[in-house]
Image 1: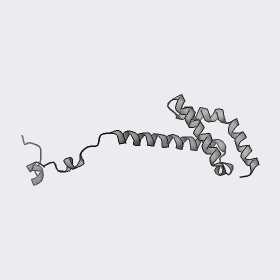
Image 2 (image 1 turned 60 degrees about the vertical axis):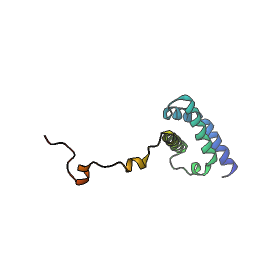
Image 3 (image 1 turned 180 degrees about the vertical axis):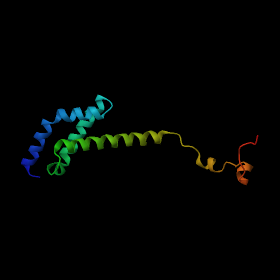
Length: 113
């Protein structure tokens, strides 16, 4: 990317910062996360300039996709972290539980009336 393209991108990003912040506010659950998300969107845009320059749908469409993907990544990582904190069940105990005799013989487990 040439320096003129880089400065044009920065100028476009600065012109769209309010829009990026509103977009992040619509996606995020709270204002603190919306601030973080909008900063991350701008960071990604500055790091990965090449796809933006050739973007068919324009800068705002590209920024929208980036914001949604970053938010989705954060939700996934939070879900993984919360699952990792859950107590693990003893799977071996569940597998070695003795079966009832009727289940072993293939009989119905429900009592007859």
